[in-house]
Length: 266
Ligand SMILES: Nc1ncnc2c1ncn2[C@@H]1O[C@H](COP(=O)(O)OP(=O)(O)OP(=O)(O)O)[C@@H](O)[C@H]1O
Image (tube, rainbow, N blue to C red):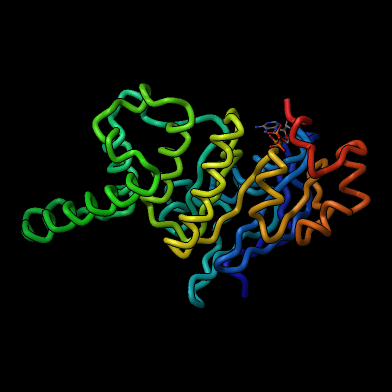
């Protein structure tokens, strides 16, 4: 069984079916892209995977070394605990907290500190805190933010806020990292840095990544497989060259060259 298996997943909002009977899988270690025109249902699909929405029908299964868990209908924090972490289309940091505190909060989400245990195992508690700080330092180093630990998140430039969001998701030690338009609003140079960083963290943390992106240069460069949604339906999937040449995909993008469809995004 694949690491993530989505079967016949549907989400309806009243009369509108935003995600319709979608089947999809992600293998361990893959970097998979999810593309489609505006309003195709990409974010709704991410919201289903991460517990923001409850599926109308269908299933979402996560297989961690043979232990299979149904994620559909779980609360978002339980989905994170199960091993799926995400970033959002619009940055959602704790803007009035420091960079380090943003990361620490994310790390604490994954630790069950029962108060009595924390008191009784005083040393263990502090060791755990120390270990978390070391891990946070490592992440900050990779994203070149080590010298910004004490800065308030709101004072970081836009590109660094986006990086901090990714660090925060990584801090929960996910099995799968979902990135919702990580390059949105970035200039070409920032996008290139981001592309390199995604490749680097994937290697470093043995990660599985799925990303939504309108920037086709990023998608075609780093994704090994791509799924294409249109009007809530999965109309194509395959390696980048297959998807780029797919008739239904070209039609969905109104005949544009898919390799340069990024300007279709508003
Ligand atoms: N909570 C909601 N209630 C009603 N309709 C919704 C809701 N969320 C999404 N939709 C609708 O579902 C459809 C898919 O939206 P979604 O945001 O998932 O598309 P998308 O592919 O992520 O688009 P974009 O690329 O523009 O971000 C749209 O028609 C949208 O208006």
